[in-house]
Length: 295
Image (tube, rainbow, N blue to C red; front, side, top):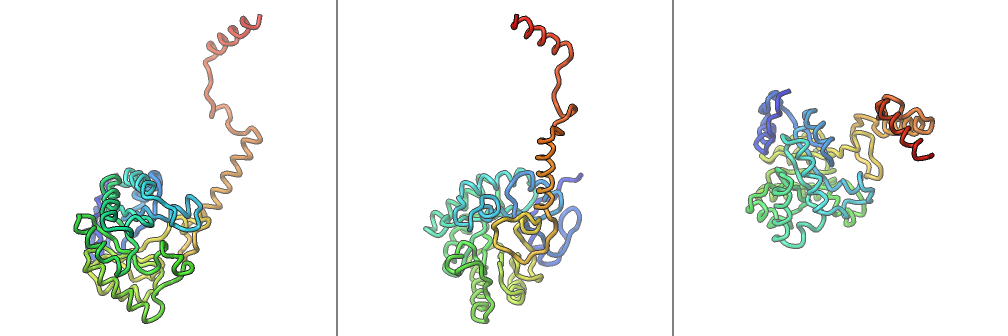
């Protein structure tokens, strides 16, 4: 199998322009999924997923928290490094956790840089609005690519009073459109739009040269991202999203675990060929030694 071509920000920009990229001359919108481990990353890369997001949703779908706020930078960097080892060719995005970029510009640069240096990420994602323009400028000036996350921002869920769609009124939509332009001017290399109307997402996508990734924001973005657990039917505790189910992994795993428990309880696993055995002569020697000791 041919080694996949490395996906870069230039690749994503080319795809936005409708150009064919990669060894298979792929064109059209690009795919992104969340990923939290080496093995899954390797499968996703083999499947042709162009970009992976090591998201702070890890706290919800893997650790059982009721929000993303408890996830730490150290934890996500460790995960991102594993994902990179599993998928060396994808465009890898590290998600900046709560309070890793809000306290000061200096901390934002230092923490963003750790994703790049320690996990070999291609980009960091930050939940922003116009108040973060100077932070985005500073991180960009330090040589760190920034993906600006607009619309519903899960780290601000307590301000919204829940996971609420954004930009449904003309006033809110205009604010998001203006923020998108401000982020482009601040140096962001890409935009991620979460839970905004498809019409608003289409306007933003058409108005910028940046690659625009949609998350429950309609079909007209340059790329799409979803939480992997959601499309696999494997999500527990994560806020529901309007996504297409591609598998019932929970059902598959539940059946497998039940069968395993039943086989163990019925002494059907492990059976002979699934066990390690001594050579007959060695077993005879062991038995003789035990007989000698018992005399």
